[in-house]
Image (cartoon, rainbow, N blue to C red; front, side):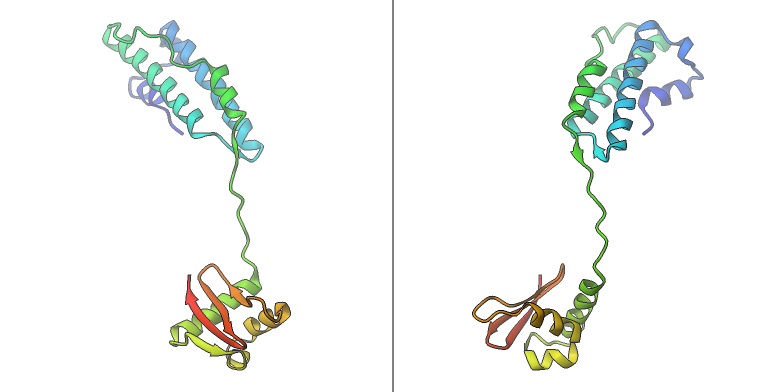
Length: 173
């Protein structure tokens, strides 16, 4: 993530040492927060949206300090909006990053079979019909089949659900 203050420094050929004391302090605070972000991500967590907003506010403040320095003004007379400790505390509530789920090869095959049936225009079928046209789906249904229960299969895109004994309806989810 490139920050506004970094862009301003690059655009104006400034180094950390060139910055006024307030801007240097702000940069130090931001660097502490970025270390906290890195540790949070290393633990497999994502920083909260609130922590990101606080970091952006800190960056904006340092950016304005740099602009004041460049234009010899003092329009940014407020203190830095957040201290690093406050933002790092916010990271304690970080959420677990979404895990990448690997597709189940059998589920992929069932979905492909149901998709082929759906594309052929088949919306209602008997279990005997599915045995020949979608054998993996048939095996799954029968492996879990229970009398007087809702039977069928559901994938991320399709569902084939028993409506009456041995008769199934195919729908797109």
